[in-house]
Image 1: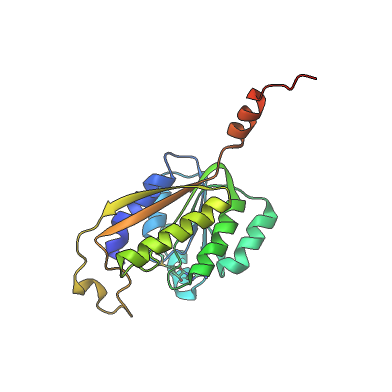
Image 2: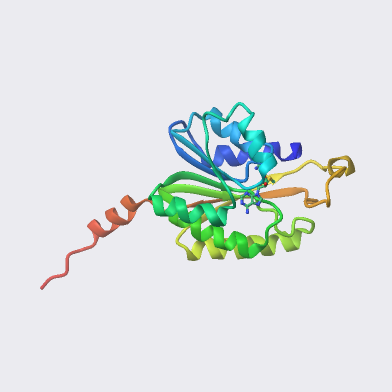
Length: 205
Ligand SMILES: C[S@@+](CC[C@H](N)C(=O)[O-])C[C@H]1O[C@@H](n2cnc3c(N)ncnc32)[C@H](O)[C@@H]1O
């Protein structure tokens, strides 16, 4: 969906401050997010995508050679990535049409796959036809990510009205707010914990 372009732009900017990072995106869609990732010159660019048509679209597109595609659902692919020992500096999750429990499960996967100091974001579309519901999802997602040791920062973005034409040919209008809350969950750097530990006073015998 083209209207999501500013949200993808802000998400890439918040997750990927410079070149040379290891990036994982779950859900290629139109490739808006991934084209922006490719422009940051990542050290590694991985994509998990399940839909055969989207996989064919990737294979015939300009990113086919530069991204590592993991074909299948993230529930099938994530355990393989975790078992491989790979780590990422930036992870994004935008699968649409899944339930909150799926996002909560993905939080756990992201916490495992992030390198220390790494950043993780997701499309915060839960309850996005009503500001109160969207705020409730925000609080729940925030608490769940924090419980995994991730520090979540939220940035409010103002949105122009989308208008009815945006939703022509789409099963349902899934976003009707005048703002978007962009989450960035940061895994603390090990060095910080180690530094704190080294400053602890030594107990007298
Ligand atoms: C809303 S689109 C992503 C849009 C993308 N952020 C962009 O910038 O164009 C959602 C994508 O997630 C994929 N998807 C949905 N469920 C999935 C799952 N369980 N595992 C992997 N991919 C999934 C869909 O096939 C679709 O390509």
